Length: 372
Image 1: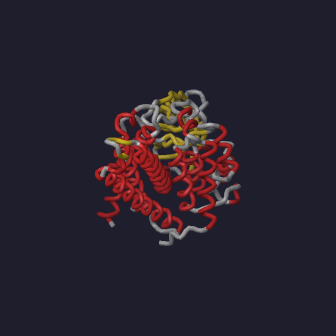
Image 2: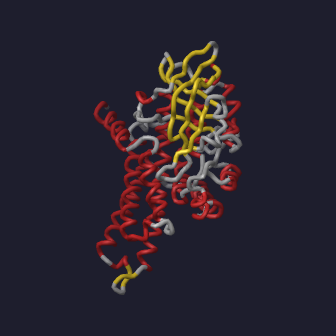
Image 3: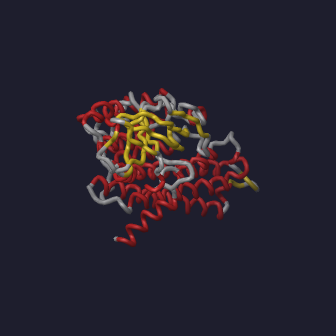
């Protein structure tokens, strides 16, 4: 594995950090908590103008077609800044779904617009009281003449209010399919959900929503295979985001431990607290290497069936444990809204549960290990 980053990769990371420092300070993060839109226009404009929205999109659609390892470096910076942005759902998941299985008409209509930030697409996947696997898809897409009538409920749909289209996973007689659905279509109801991470999520109810047959993405019954393959790529970036968040949480805690005094000496001078921080730094470095390994293997065309879930599993557990230890060092003030460490603490747990959670990731790893 070659992790000797190029000058261009270092520049991309530095550029991303500088842009986020200017356009996504912690005050902006706080302003966007529980916001119905979920992201600031100024930040999204900068992400698009710097070409980051199209970094995983091919040149023929206006993107720069960079590797997942390049994107992982950017996502570390997103994690450090707690950046409220629809980049993951739109520029990663939705774009990859269309590029993988979309028709030429669907690609022509949406991919370039997603890549330049003028359109936002988001998946509608999870359902109430159902699993993360294919058995959890109960949303029904019933044939209605030449079209489909979609009925059911989705939860935890990110940035649904701002989306131009939802990519809904629905069950048809052929299996599971993906459909482009207009969130403003008759029969669609959006209800904002308040989450632990205070990010932008919606419950979406579909009541006999008419969807044209041309809105189906890919061949009939292939929706889950497409979704699973794309999400395997995506969770590597979520792992990078988790490592970035953990790194920044530890960084501000170390600064606090150097200045906050108890018994006439800094907190960091107490051996037990110093060891906590040393152990946390070790876990973060180990998680970062695992994330880079998963991203590098993808860039080399190798299987990520085990590495991708391992990366998110370990990185999110590291983020969660890191912020727990950091909260312990900060003490009671760390849980008050005036201090920033609680922002990281809440988002660490939310990210651990988002998309594929710990139990499902363990099942994915076990399937590869035990079944070969």
